[in-house]
Length: 198
Image (cartoon, rainbow, N blue to C red; front, side, top):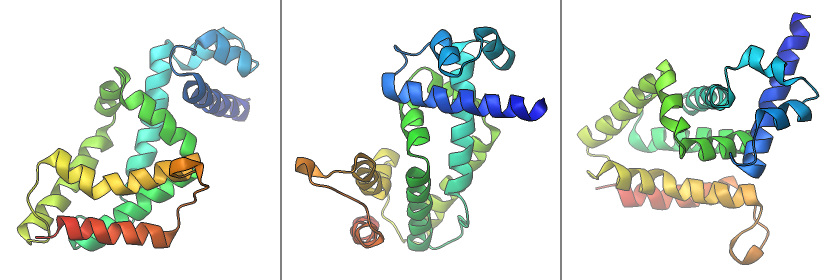
């Protein structure tokens, strides 16, 4: 009986992610979700208070998975170049393994749910602290130039996420088929490091 409940909850989460990615919040409802999962709406309310609670709980699960994956084999004490490359590898690996979850989180992140999700995850402040320490070490060791945070982030991660978006869509500019390779990632990474070095 317990195993079936866990399976049911996994189905609810996967289906909710699919529906929100495909139709956004406007096309999403608890009734529609229950119907797609072949369960009663009442069953959903065993797990979640309401639609907002469901969205926030799923968002928190994905965010935690992302934060954990991003710092795998990573230390803020690494040299900036080594640490940033590990970040690129981890972020690319996560995006390629879980494209729907990433698409879901992108939608949720830019909604009123975004802050509530991040506030609910204790590990988020740990993650932010680790990343802050990593950047501060890079500055202290004169491995990177001082930049405002938003500019730093767009240079350090923007090229990677542009390539990952093209990979997820499966096509480049003009509709040409596209698949991200490690060689392309390394080419973009070298240009990124060059832009960030003093």
